[in-house]
Amino acid sequence: MDCLINREKQFSNAQITHCIKQLLSVLVYLHDRKIVHLDFGWTGNIYVTTKGVLKLGDFGNFKTANHQLLDLKKNRLVDNEEIFKAFCCQDIMDVAVVMVAMASGDVETNRASVDQFLRNDSKLTKQLKSLIRKCLVGKESARQLLDHRVFKQNDGPCAAI
Image: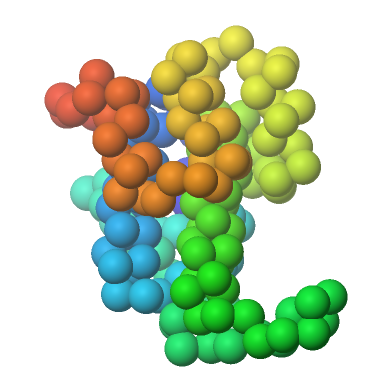
């Protein structure tokens, strides 16, 4: 993905929508199987085939719902489901980072720069900005985000990636 962002500089709204729909579909697949990636906000872990299909790679940081962590602040073991939901939120927040990287053409985009981009950018549609904000809040699952209105409007063919 880094190479494409460097080449394209900025993706169109339709291209971003097409790619993000694919990423959210991947997250639905992973999260349904109790797997979280935890490291795809960095666009170097997203690969694009010659046909424009996105593939998620580098599962070096992935976790399954079988992990337990000690919450040192509350001195208790954190429930697996609680950990899993927090990790899923991290994956969802990474979707927002990827969208902004595609829109801005900046592969160095991080969570801290997303809010500033949203305030200053006028090229993204209101629907895409709404989706980014929903990803940052982290209250909706990947499956719920796939029902966002931005995907209902752009179901047709997309410009080549």
